[in-house]
Length: 411
Length: 84
Image 1 (cartoon, rainbow over the protein chains, first blue to last red):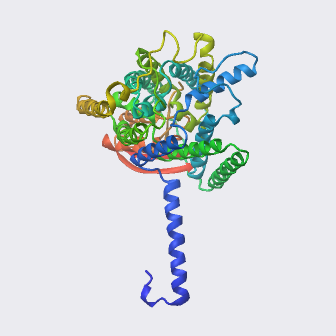
Image 2 (image 1 turned 180 degrees about the horizontal axis):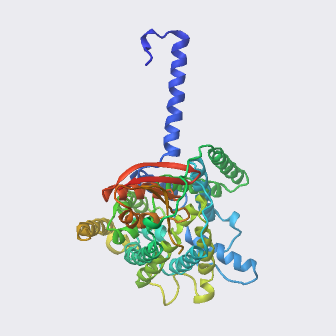
Image 3 (image 1 turned 60 degrees about the horizontal axis):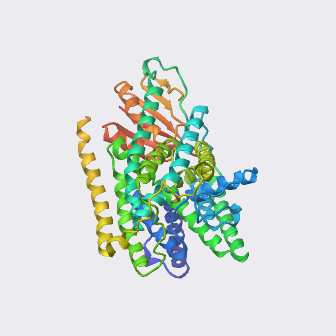
């Protein structure tokens, strides 16, 4: 312990600099190498999402991936249109919406490297098959629901779209079905596990040396450079949304907040911790959306067709996201962390949803399959809309408590 | 899916390698694995999913087992040391 009273002149200055340096080092290490509390992640996500909405648009990632699929078909000579009207086929690097998705992958990659959590995680062929199945189900789910877990449930509910709460019903049931499949797989894999016949082996020792954090720093530097280039090429929105994407990737990677786990664990392990935090984040976010939208700022934004297709699409998407090991945002983050199953899921999801116009003959939201977009304040005014959304969040919360209360029955 | 096997390090110390099993597989597996572990046994569970380093110790603790430590083995791989 240094006695500050006897320090004078130069020594005192050295002490101050040492203190500042050690504190910065400690704080940065804490932020970038230790996992964040999940609540901090949920609140950071909802605030970042509000800022991005003020800047341009709210978070949603799947329609862009569907566009990538259509773009690939067109490259291969098969003419098809992108299923989501607001996102027509474009070269990916010129599409400002796609910059969010690419940013999420890059942000998660950078964050995982800095924390020494990156690894190319391979699977056997069965793992890839399940990933592909998950991607295909998510691909169909996203065009039916629409669009995905984060955009169609989390943001849509905050944005006062009736489709949000309806999607939740499908997602919850789908995630339960998917979770049951995973549990069955684990039971099968554990069938022959027997400690009494275990062969002799060596203890695994830790290796400490690694250059990953430096690579992570390089990734973040490169992403900033890319943003600056976009800015000076006259595409500031591409630059801005890319940086927002990086931020989302970073937040989700560090806090390990998982929208799939939020739905899956409620019924599978009667644990609603993650969803409770998401509900809390939605309560904050809804207030922000209400303030902006009530003043006439983008009132129709993230209001999707509402109908039975929200529940059916949510159910299909829900199974898919569990099998793929991530929802729309989740597979982007996990692909950045090096999960090869997520790479397969992204590719199959792109190709499935990208073919939707070819299969259905219409775009998302058109013709017999879809209901009309229902914007709650238009239906019941702001008082009614706020009461409905907060009522829904409260009801969902009480439902989780009711499920959790049944925990003791298993013991 | 591939089978999960145990390795014996010494008399009452075992290892189950779950590297390559993404989340939530380790979380779903750990309850059964610990049930089969002989009483007084130590278990090293190897995982390579970042979320497992929190999910698995949380669940093991809730089920009444000792979580001794979680250590990083190399980039993106961890060893969760449990005691029954």
